[in-house]
Image (cartoon, rainbow, N blue to C red; front, side, top):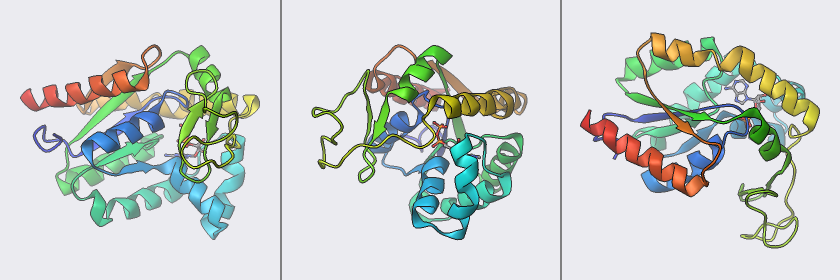
Amino acid sequence: MLDNAGIQALVLFGPPGSGKGTQAKLLKECLGIPHISTGDMLRAHIQAGDPMGQAVAGVMRSGALVDDESVNALVEERLKAPDAAKGFILDGYPRTRHQAEQLIQWLEAQGIGELVIHLLVDYNSVIKRLTGRRQCPVCGTLYNLNSKPPKQDGICDLDGNKLVIRDDDSAAVIKQRLEAYEQQTRPLIEYFREKGRRLLEFDASSEPPQILVGKICQAIRDEARV
Ligand code: ADP
């Protein structure tokens, strides 16, 4: 589907809690291309306790953005992996002007077309979603106490592990993450428009994720006909 549209890269864009991770996982299933989440990659480094993990742990716990140099290097390396050759879904990257410049430069050099998917959601829904979010630390499945509770309280439906709350899903840190989004990330929408990048917007507040992913897939097919 992506090839027909001349699109190899999907960039999922939106505030924390807009459902980027959930949509990326659904799109990965239906498109068969990898989901590349900078947040997940950084958390894996923290989990491993390696030098990068040690360097970024404090910043992430505070809700601020990790420095561009580290994140750009991480993404550049990941995009070279063989599984990304036929396409990939970016979730949570780019998040600053510098990251966007690097990505566009890289995509142009490789001759890769991208489509930015902007998920629109109001901040009240975001706060409700983030405070209710739970995740399985083993398989990564996301739950939400409001919209998608596990069958058994606090336990993953798929593998029975105990669900966890992400370190940065506390009220004070959520506020900081939304501020970082407003100041450093949201302005990129204007930048994408100025640069004439393909960008589609979706209302991500009201519909269940399965319906929304259907609309996104349909829009990608429509792009192929443009
Ligand atoms: P969310 O979109 O809900 O904030 P993520 O998992 O994408 O969740 O990001 C969690 C944290 O990881 C961010 O608050 C930030 O500290 C760090 N991070 C993730 N992606 C980037 C990025 N592209 N640039 C800088 N920091 C990032």
